[in-house]
Image (cartoon, rainbow, N blue to C red):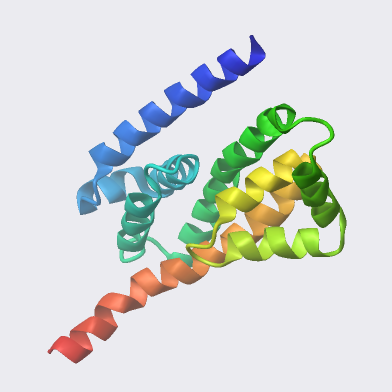
Length: 180
């Protein structure tokens, strides 16, 4: 019953967030109207599903021309980190499907309990377009502590989103210089 309610909640949340993203659609007047709250919802929604990640980041890059990249990066980094926790939840819920004596599950658990677990989790969420969702799911399967997971993922996501926000801010100027 808990799994069904969780699925219903996340499904409803993702549909509502997807509709909001479609409504915003990188229109400058709407970006100014929704500002950082809109950026948070976009980053949360687009990182909580595999269906919308690219459109979400494109909208965030466009928003960086209007909103301060430092603030935009922090807010969207928090949203991205929290949205990525759905992959962690999928790992926790899918843990039972692997079986208690699964050798693969044991290797994942050993990896995340070693000194490399934190490094893999952090870098997997820091590097743009890295398989952060897969790494987060593995962290869930291995029962990596949720609070530590959120701290590492949110810090990595903030750094990544600040960098991407600055790319979105300066890329049009650089392109204009080269294109005339």
